[in-house]
Each structure stands twice: as structure tokens, then as C-alpha cells.
Amino acid sequence: MLKTEPDEVLDLRNFLGPVALLKVTNVFRELLPNQVLEIVVGDLDMKNDLFKVLKAFSYEIIDVDEHETFCRIWLKKHEKNP
Image 1 (cartoon, rainbow, N blue to C red):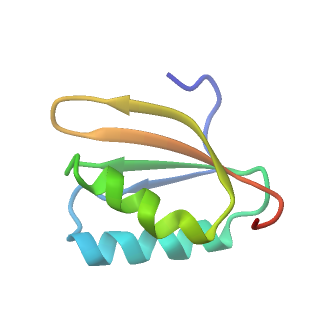
Image 2 (image 1 turned 45 degrees about the vertical axis):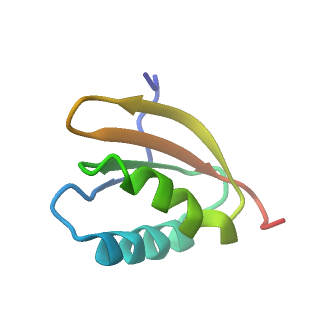
């Protein structure tokens, strides 16, 4: 479990797949380098889709906390895209 507070939290449990992925892309684009985004998804398959969409960005996976009905993912945005 992450010990520090994220800079942004995005709870996507009530969003459909394409809308959720668009929201993640938009929020991640606005993050400053070294900021942390916490993403909460209810559909555990969405986790894999998130990483496909975020391939355009440079980031570090800080933590993944999987539960039976949801998953929390913490990502730290890097300075520059590769």
C-alpha cells in the first residue's frame, strides 16, 4: 500500500470502458512530472486496458492493490516521454 497521498485520484468504477480510458488519458496528460495518479477501477480487466492506453506516456508503476471487486493503481509520471 502506498504511504504518500497521490496528487490526483481518478475513480472510474462507474464509467464505461471507452469513457474511462479517455478520462485517464486526459488526466494523465495534465499531470506534472513526478506527480502521482491513483486510479480506481471496478472492472479488473480495465487494468490491462489502462496500460495499453498509457503506452504513449512515460511513467512508473508505484503500486497495484487488487481486491475482489476493485483495483487501485498508483502511477508516477516521468519527466519526458521516451
